[in-house]
Length: 409
Image 1 (cartoon, rainbow, N blue to C red):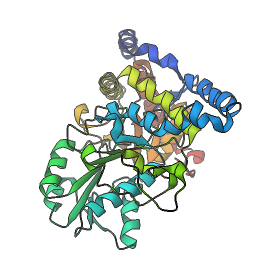
Image 2 (cartoon, helix red, strand yellow):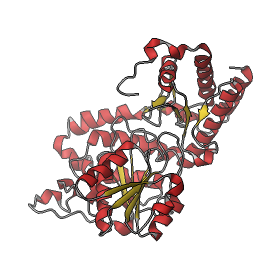
Image 3 (cartoon, one colour):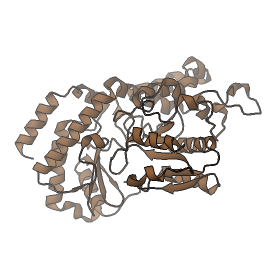
Image 4 (cartoon, helix red, strand yellow):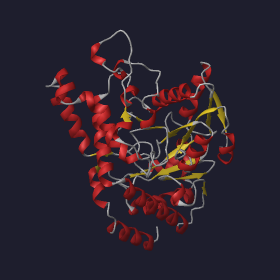
């Protein structure tokens, strides 16, 4: 990498107002981690918090800790901490289950709120679990899946559509949907709207209430740094809290779970989205990550994310790297990632990983780099671009060991 780029990177890092936060995460030596959009790095405070939960709250407190340590309130407590990150009120967000399960709950709730309508409208190429959940309800005769391209989405909103369900930041390209405009168009057609924030929450500003969104879901293990399989979160707008009925009527969603009644009565608020016993270890880890992101501030994170991605593009250009960019060129219209197309994207990704540059691959030909600005440096951008240029120039990605795909890529 030419020295001027490295020099500029050092200057940018020296002036970075978020530079101190890198030390609050565990980033392995020799690793440039560009996959925080799939699994965020481990906050340094998380192991200590988990040890406290395991040794003190579980080890000594035992079952008493449901009360004494506040375990029973954790889904609502962590949800309330996520709420301001996504433009919601504390009582509108709950942390529970997985993104997929929460999608099922909220799609079902929306369909029940729009009797006579069965169509759930989405786009081809949406994240698979979103589409699979519609299919599952379709097989039960409860829903009808309809897919429309981005350019024809508004026109596809007719009197049969009960729910418009879209992912705010596309998982492959990073392209953003216009949340406010599409929510308005759906409402004018008499439909409800469900936004998947899995690649937005904690990475860029989201204003669910400002856009008058009805429902939303998101995951806790990407930009919120909650760890692998971290609990997800769900949002129900205040105006729908009474009408929304979710189908998974587990005991924790009961109005009085410890009354042990034979008959189900849903909790009056967003707590009705709870189902089984909360995963306390996962919630404790997620709370640490959420607290750290809230401390930094989403606006500051997004500003640095755009600066990192634009500097990375400049480094690639100056290094002579020519790859087809499939993400929007305007950083204001994409999430915290850049994606490139190459027929051998998988092998290139593996060659980069062997060099310590961890991005990821999305079938069939997408090389994806995520920018988690809390712990990434401009120096990392310059070095990663240099490694990518070297991989392309040397042809090392053509080595046989990089051709066989692993189960998780």
